[in-house]
Length: 275
Image 1: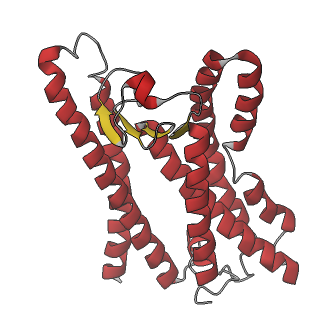
Image 2: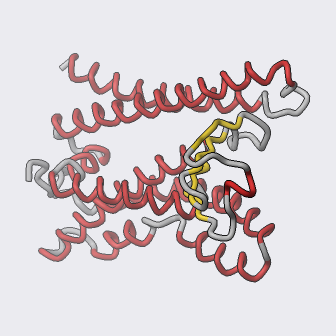
């Protein structure tokens, strides 16, 4: 029993540690986003810090992913009656995991397109306009608003490239995970609702409707960007980032709402995690 509690506790600690390290890195790096700090003498040192930023960021993602896996696995194994156990059991079976992985990857690609991470500019030749070598890439260490630096710029072809912004990368992974979680739970709940009155089909549909928090921003960007030009479109991109961040509490709350519909009278989950 003590080993189970320690295993569960270690998973939580890894999740908290990963997010804490991310937050600290963003705060520390924001101190270098000043033209007075980014002098020619300090440029090489800040460039090395930028490389270290992404190494630590990837390590933090790894810690969070492993922590979530351990926490999830322990919840399923203990077969408790709390809401988090219901969520874990619902998303542990093979079908739910396939749905989660497909949604996570698909939404991640979609997010890359609408957030400007994957850039396609047919009217701009990167070789002519920016003197780029195809293919090539570099880390830009300075200077922009906190969370938007350091950027990774990659030129794949004359018109296609990548612009990886730290805050967008974090949001992409977090929101894609939550969208995948919501979708797998919603489909499981909808499947049960078709078999009987055990789960509300309206409640199951909630997850599917909120599973695309970037869509509203994308449609708005297309409409306003076309009418008002590039400057407003760029401003709207940052507004969309804020909109997606605000949607995270909704994505966190929805699985809890749907999980309540997946409880049996004895408090346990209606779904068998082994199927």
